[in-house]
Length: 78
Image (cartoon, rainbow, N blue to C red; front, side, top):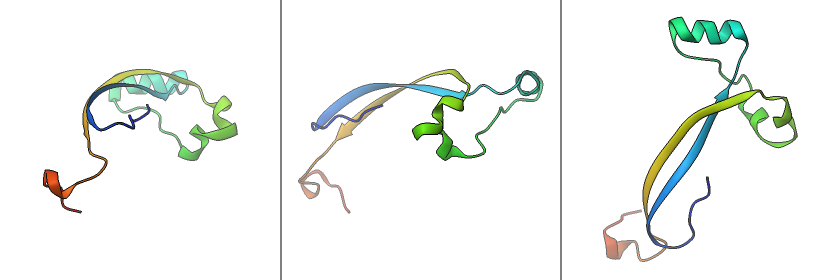
């Protein structure tokens, strides 16, 4: 999800996904927990993405407060 470029308070909803895996991996996930993991996380970007089988995994709601300058004025130490 894209971060806003303007300062202030923002509410974002980021959609998440996970690898789908084979039917054996899904059955194992049902009884044992966990789930399939990417062996090469760099495969989730670029030209190799079309090979991934994925499914929706819900969404994450974020509330962000963005400062772009004058950090010391707001008590932020770098």
